[in-house]
Image (cartoon, rainbow, N blue to C red; front, top):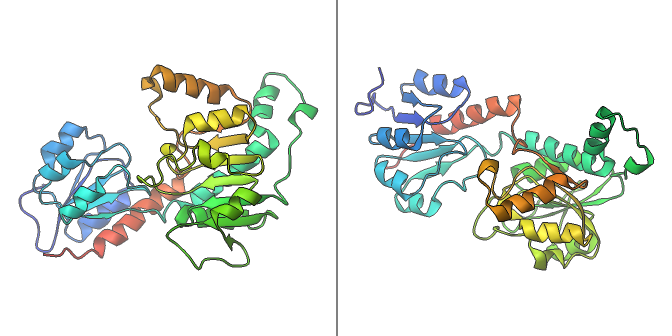
Length: 322
């Protein structure tokens, strides 16, 4: 029986409010932690069960804001089963001494493979050609593709997913440039540590792999797009608001952007778009040089297991500070 008020010796009270692989639940329970698993928890459920909890495990749907952190006054850790921490008020958590962890390394291969797949789809019109053939339309010249070999791919953000994408690209005969404001010394025979100025001049492809912060919100806007010397292809597998949708649409219209593949959108709740958002979405959805996927870049059967495995290791080695 779970008792949120009575921990075992050395154990913690842990609430998991989204779907995770069973190995996380079993692994935590086996060492004496008390685990409450509520994969379908509403916000009201979460707030009701938070008092007395030491660890809150979330995925994307849960916003860990000031109210959650206030009611969860005993929290020591907020653990994100995934990469991004943008749904956590990190400043408030830090002020309360709450440690925030994620499992960004667990889905990096999945994101890297998805990015490569999207890029090949763009270059070879694979999505459009597939749909046409299914409708009995057989067009070869209209779907003539271009080759990836010989192109320059710029990766923005060289953390887990950015470096994974570079590894996937390494056998494709491309030149890889990478920029990361907070990481240095990673250049090697595979990737060139670069600057924005080099990227503006050389890039044929621009791919974003950065967390969403105040600094990276609308990181790609009209002003930055205008600095590119060549028409380029855009990939975004980070967060929707890293690129400004209206700026991308305008750049597609004036052919500054040759095409784009987005695994994320500014507003991913498609049933609740306002009129302006709906108009932008319909432009993107109907355009022959745009590919959209529903935030599944890191969403594989393997990553589902690995995310829980990584979180389990981190939680089992955590030592709460008094």
